[in-house]
Image (tube, rainbow, N blue to C red; front, side, top):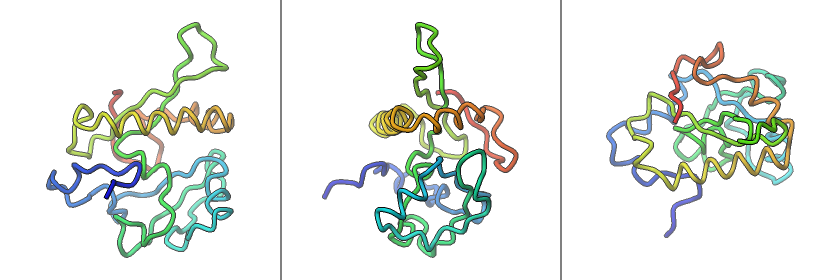
Amino acid sequence: MAQPAGSIPLCPHKGCAFKCCNFKQMVHILLYPGEIDEARAQGRSLSHLEIVDGDYHGGVRVKCRAHDTSTCDNGYKPLDCVSYPFFPELASSQNGNSSNPTVTLCKGSSCPIQGHEIPQHEGYVRDRWQELIQRKPEVATRLHWFDFTSTDDFDSESYDRY
């Protein structure tokens, strides 16, 4: 059986006990503008997500209350979670056209997996975010607000450009 898109088969073998899915130690998950509405429209369960801030820089900030966090209690898995350990940043295209941003990634320091060990996941995450900013330009506007090398006020994890 194939792994679900965005999953990392190496995770069970790194000895971290799926730390990234233990939101008792992490403060929040960020949903991009419109993500929660899209999930509702698809009929996905959001019962495990507690809204902490309904307008956090255009998106939604939530806490995960799932009993089985690795599966989100079989509910909707936000793109922020699917993307981990990578997070998107934006760079202007090489011709200097800032209206055509390209997605670059940074990697969360808490994950013991090295980026070079998961090139398929890296490509998947980059492609998902690139497609999203093409489809929803407001997501690019929001990503410009974040500088993941310094993180936002609620996140203690550091991020390294990848």
